[in-house]
Length: 188
Image (tube, rainbow, N blue to C red; front, side, top):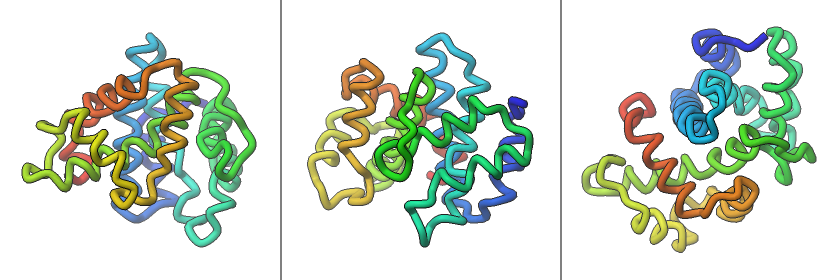
């Protein structure tokens, strides 16, 4: 089954209670939908993958190496399609799984999961506390500051952009564009 957006949100909330995790899922959903349009793929499917990608996050925060390993059982129990399960597992490639992203949807998820966090944080430290006036050069400046958003793995983002066959600057710009319309719903 390919869940509807509402079903995916209900399933995510079944296992995740912290609003910050819900906001992250909504940010990744919006960005996945945006890139689906670029690739001329199904934005509903890509959005659902974005919502569900961290379904097991709150169960694995104390054991991060298990992240993406509990998700398959949670998703299978709900009858979720195997293509979504594979995508969810592949976003942890090289970090907590050995499942390599194998298609545009999976490569995009792998790349933008970390990137959305960096961009949102860059927006929050602006005087406007908004993405409306955030530009590539500001993100690139923050990118170089290793103390800024220290938990964001820039190597994964760079590697992901390469796997997407898209210049990193373009990936950043498209992610900013994807997040602007949803900044209120993601807690900004």
